[in-house]
Image 1 (spheres, helix red, strand yellow):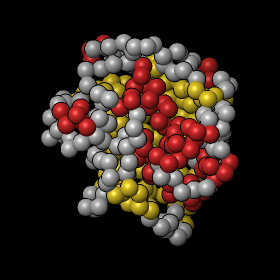
Image 2 (tube, rainbow, N blue to C red):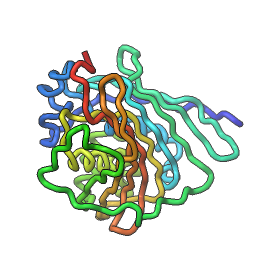
Image 3 (cartoon, rainbow, N blue to C red):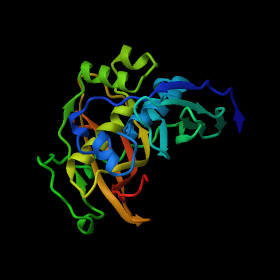
Image 4 (tube, rainbow, N blue to C red):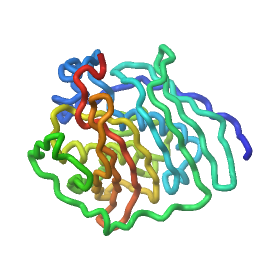
Length: 277
């Protein structure tokens, strides 16, 4: 194993966009305070996007074509928090390169951590036939906790990624790498946000959900004017300290024919009311 130079940290002021879908969720001030938070939380996929700024600067397009990133949310991130993302030195082995990622707030508290890799070879994408795209139902059905289980599939409606959508998300993630805008490439955080949003819009639960961990594997680039949809399935459910979790597998599909990325997530779908107190 060899170790390369450690990339420089970056500092971002966390922001929360004005999104009507946030009303009644933990990304809404009133709702978040009922669960003991001091205010609306910046979404986990946005923090994922912050972490991703280092691997894209280190490895560029190659990372979006075959790289991976895992993130784990550890503490709430609020509007206006100053977040510093840093990483370990680059470790190189026979199978590829990797870096460990950490995000800390202005008090030095770790709010998220992760790891990114750039394998030497490309991974084989999942069989698209195993991930059907099912239209979303509006309004989404309410599913009691005792009825939610493995095998539940999430819906999705194809959406064309316009230049406006790309620019909006580059601003939301405070992205600095110029390749996204210059080449019209979908941001990795946008891909994560799409699959999380589709899962949120598929079902209603007793409480808003919380993003916990996610690992994304990239297979190909998505660009402006591509029509993107997601497909996902619950793989396990469990309870810890009064909170209900599910694990799930997802893919992002471009133009109905290509798997752009896959992801494995853990989510709290029913939150204990005193969880943040």
